[in-house]
Amino acid sequence: MTTAQTVAPRYERSKVYDAIRENLWIHFTQMADFQDPAARPTVIVRGEGSTIWDDQGNELLDGLAGLYSVNAGYGRREIVDAMVAQLEQIPFVNAFAFASVPAAVLADRLGELAPLGGNARVFFTSGGSESVETALKLAKQYQSNRGFSNRYKTISRRGAYHGTTMGALSVNGVTSIKNAFGPLVPGARHVEMSNAYRSDDDGYDAIEKLVAFEGPETIAAIITEPVQNSGGCVPPASEDYFKKIRKLCDETGILMIMDEVICGFGRLGALFGSEVFGVEPDIITTAKGITSSYAPLGAVLVRKSVADVFNQGQKFNHGLTFGGHPASAAAGLANLDIFLREDLAGRSKIMGAYLRSELEAALGDNPIVGDIRGIGLFQGVELVKDRATKETPNDHEAMVWLTDELRRKGIMLRVDERVDPTTQFSPPLIITKEEIDRMVLELTACITEIGRRWGKIGSAH
Ligand SMILES: Cc1ncc(COP(=O)(O)O)c(C=O)c1O
Image: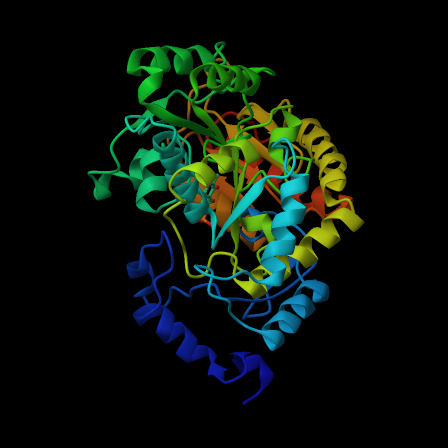
């Protein structure tokens, strides 16, 4: 057997394809699509820098950093070595009773770095949904420990994605992925998303009105994402949107949760997304970039005064076997070293500004580009049928073509249709100018072709 016929030692390519057809369940994917023998699933086998390769040797520039998550880029030997060293020493420590050295040290370092007033306490999980789930449970028990056992409601935003476990799904605002699973956790209320392109109103008043309507004495927490992923890299519509939420929470005893599963770890040009908006929430949920996805890990960072409430009353009755797994925590420490040494957050700010200016130069006047938005290396390009009316094109086929055509050109971007169709850039923070140029060039060519098909761009363009 030659190397070309294998995708990894011991596995024949055809056996891998068979296993995908018959056994593997790819998340959010219609597996029946692979029943057709001609439909070949993509198997990714290798990565270096910002580039990944499939098992056929095709190269893809990964403008999505895996899933908004390989922030330090592929091929970081340092993270791998840190994990191996930890695994050799001890592969697992019972998180319900003991502490591991890397988890304690990572908690200490993140507790200092997080914009939570310093010395925050950290509850580790194994990923983003678990972080959100944990933050919601923590907020509810915090309220009940303080004597407010009726504060069980939450406020989140329509269109928001906060994960897939039942609690996280309940605060989720993406209807299409919720409706098969009801009844969901009671008390989850939703308000309009804050979106400057779609409304003159920044959306804050709706939150204030909902709090007044429900009664603040029934609400445990408000959860928002600094720049909302679903809907396509949507920053808040006013500079003080989050500051107003902060003030409302201070006045009413509601906890402010920032879901930084994507926006944390440099994505917006600062280590934490909250910093970009000058706010200190009560709880920050993280995952993905915390290890640059070299290992599964999430963390719920909790303001000390909130965590201290659990010292007087009931302990936090919650745990996860793999929360803060020692190898993952070791990966988190090595990742943090890289972040600080290479100033990846600063690099995200600089390269994000470059990406934005190149997108505006290439697509700013395009008749089917409605909005170009985002912060740092989290940028989106929203397509519209008509710039004047901002009409959303309901052309799923064109969006599938866009994804496929970009891939054929060797570029991986996400064409997000969960709200309005927006192509998202969320590359590794080490992306180079040349790589950005390639992505912008190819996206521009694809969008121009779609504009032609929609009759908005003449063939002379
Ligand atoms: C803002 C936000 N919260 C939570 C999650 C859920 O994270 P995970 O997929 O690691 O469970 C995601 C995933 O993309 C996310 O974007």
